[in-house]
Image (cartoon, rainbow, N blue to C red; front, side, top):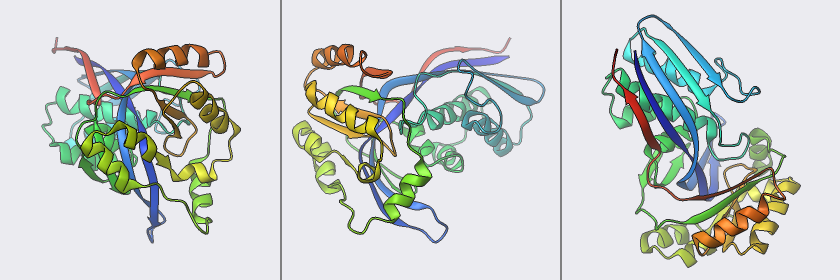
Length: 295
């Protein structure tokens, strides 16, 4: 049996815009992604046989074909033309329904692990193509770092790495329906688009002040969610330089001047919100904890 244990990073959208809708119904995006140090933990093992099994520490997470990690294992085996017994153990820490790419991070982690455990040697571009069939965030979460995503998520442009950003992520109990959010954006008569050009300039110049002023998310215009409003107000009150919803919601991230300020704010915010997490921007999607050779 071969086995790999790894951490899979969540993401935030420093900037999130919707630029159009294709004839097939998919929306086109223009977003600046950043991986952060909020992780799910995966253990992936392969051995002779066939079939996929998935277990999770949270009882409400589906452990069958509805789960992106399960579907990622099936897609990789099919692409490689292999039959193996794959066992996946998932420990969730990235909240669901948050816009942080938790399910996509798990799928990316399974593709990453199986490509190495099975010695498929699929290039990164092909892994990202497989990932895109699973979800729009998966290609970026295979890449990691700071990147611009366009199209439906398949057009990725790596950007200059940012200095380490101290952050606090806050999420209430409410979640936002992504299909309903897109439908509401389609109905906007005069959407207020974020300034993607300024965001790109801030990343290139590493101007964190400009970056904080340029952070924005078109989905906030249609987010009918009191928890988002409360999270933005709380982060701002605690000294965040900006407080912006990520993805289609409902988590909100705040960028702080220092790590100590972020840690102190997080301690206080945990008294108000079920999920408040101090973290930082990171350059890699995965942290490999242990890889065991065949035995």
